[in-house]
Length: 331
Image 1 (cartoon, one colour):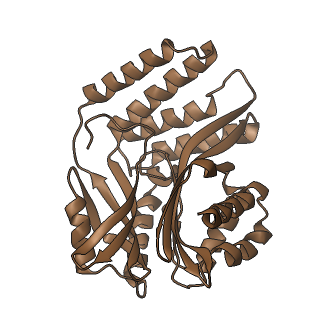
Image 2: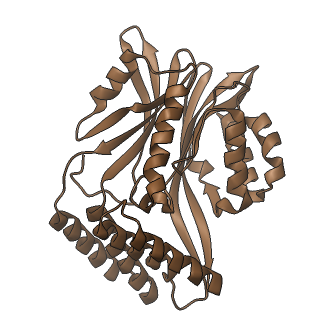
Image 3: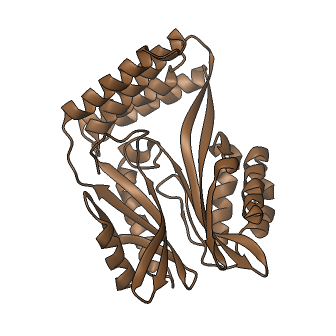
């Protein structure tokens, strides 16, 4: 599927160059001409239902919103059937943090906001602040620091006039509290954003999931469940790209989480990492463990569902969770 690889290369080139004015031409070149495209970004407000919204999302990424985004195209997983194809690739997202009076002021504002808002419990707010400070000082001996977030990208392509074009796209990265969220999770605006997202899905014209597809999603449920008011699809005829939100219901004790963290820390200490990196990794593991016990496990799913004579059959599933590691036994 060399043509699909070329589309991913063009998307990567756009994120390398980061020229907002080039977003319209890139959209026209690599995205489907259909007006009901579906793309999911990493923030609560980044649910895009048409070409213009996708263009604004990409333009905002390039205009200072994102760091250095790299797609592992060489190891991308690609499958196809007829005029439809779907792909998945691991990515990395690099941010560079530099000491400055402005950044210190920004950190203080985050702390003030976490103290003042009542949308989360004290434990949730403290675990969030601990995570923020981990990022702020994660290489405290250096005035300029790089931080890599593990990320992922997946999507669906259609063949139009003999050429492959992107029809649906999902950007994912592990961030605090809710899967793929940024700093909005400790504000009252977070819940409002979720409600606006539900309303936007409800008002979307066409491409609504039918009862049979919703039933197929329910059959996937085990230790988790879906919010059926937050399901949207891209209808390609035989194949459907499905987006759904859910929550992990299985409870895990704090002891299990902390034991997992201690085991990970033991591995770090015994590794051949540099001493200062061991200190950083240990602090980061503790930060993730505190977040794991302080917050619920909400997630997002994007999937390829094939409509057959016997009902829907899932050909690809991409679960997006909020943490870099999931405690064994969660599923």
